[in-house]
Image: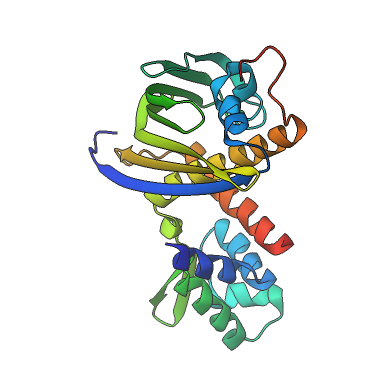
Length: 152
Length: 113
């Protein structure tokens, strides 16, 4: 952990939903609704979940993963434009170490009768954070993805 | 990066190559060690290994007459791993959001719309 390094990375995901942008936005705006889909992995033990959904507000999702690692997601909402855009910055801690600092932009656009959601994340990945747990999850991801490819 | 992933998935899409990777995940092995359980000719195994090496999954070193193969743990760099984990987590969340919205097309009663 004494090795100080930063890797920058970005990804973008798009989804369309058969409901209007305002409905999709509402699922981000309410703590109860967001908890239905924004969660840790199966077996995640939540220590704290809080959200103050407004420009200048904050969010936290802190808890223990099934493998024993404790992750802490802390976000700050820079911009909340109802039914249109959310921009928040967040850092992610694992077992007390900050592993990344990210900027996330979520855009809600009308598309036909439904909505298109565009999620862009730009991140700084810190100090080559690596441990057996994240490697296992990385491998798990690979195998899950492979399974999906083979099943297709 | 997606081209790297394509070659990675292609390399792992073959059951013999997956078996080779599974064997190597337990420790390095020589080409002839790898060939034995598969009842395959050496050239056939070498061909599979070449695909795995090209995809960056496996690395090999020749010492004298023996070529020893091992898993290349850097197949996914740490940064790539991080992005993939993050991206996959988000893909899963946004799919869950889709399922949730399909089941709840109107906002919850009592929720401001």
